[in-house]
Image 1: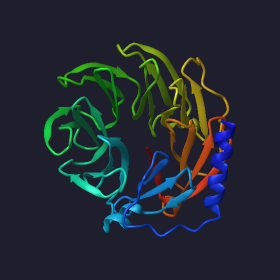
Image 2 (image 1 turned 90 degrees about the horizontal axis):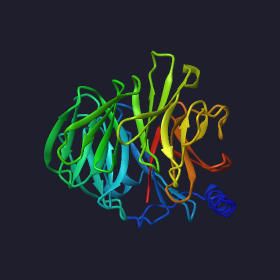
Image 3 (image 1 turned 30 degrees about the horizontal axis):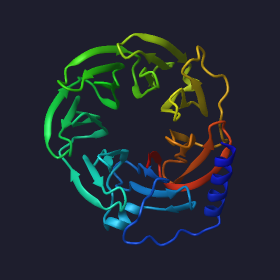
Length: 334
């Protein structure tokens, strides 16, 4: 980890001394590429995509617009690698853009989605959660054809495909479990209103985080694959928690609450102190590199100016920082 930190420190330091290079007509993204998803402002259509290369320390801003010669859209909600391509969920534009992962050129777009939030592949289908429709769209493997709609009765957020099941975080507080093959609901587990974030650990247990503005709590719970609650942690509103991610070994998780906190999946109490915090920052989202155990933490600043990305080691040591677009809100790791 010290060697990795040193390498990253050098590359980020080198980047800090460089001007951005003009972007060619296409990029050649490699295994150390990190895509920074900049949400942009609602109704401003100023979402953007940045590309950071860990090896060279080079950041290229607004690469989608440069390569595809058009704006990305209104509110870039989430992104992931599906079928070897980059899938970008553009919430207020009601679409998903599918990009070639190496060149970042748009291959096709998926429309007719309402207000999509996240996309996950489960078996031979793509599940898409939604803000307003109270339904999940199940589409074919390409995403182009609508296969089925699942009525949830609630705003839906993050989803996890684990084993033969899809777990769905519903904002009404219910963690719903569906069979991926026949789309039938199997179980509903109540976590708390404002449920948005879920991840799975190395034992295939599900961790769910709910935070609600009008209630004096944020709640983090651990559930077994068969729907038995193992742990439940509650924190006061002053510790309002958001965002969840796992380390590469899936034996520890990270969340935001006035700083970055680390919790082992075996812990029985919440940590008292954050592993990382920075005065004046508006920490917005967090993700862990799936191979390097390095954290990427977004700072939304004032929600109008360009934000920042902090690159932090697993122990909380700051390795470097980058200037991103408007409201950096997510990451895609290659």
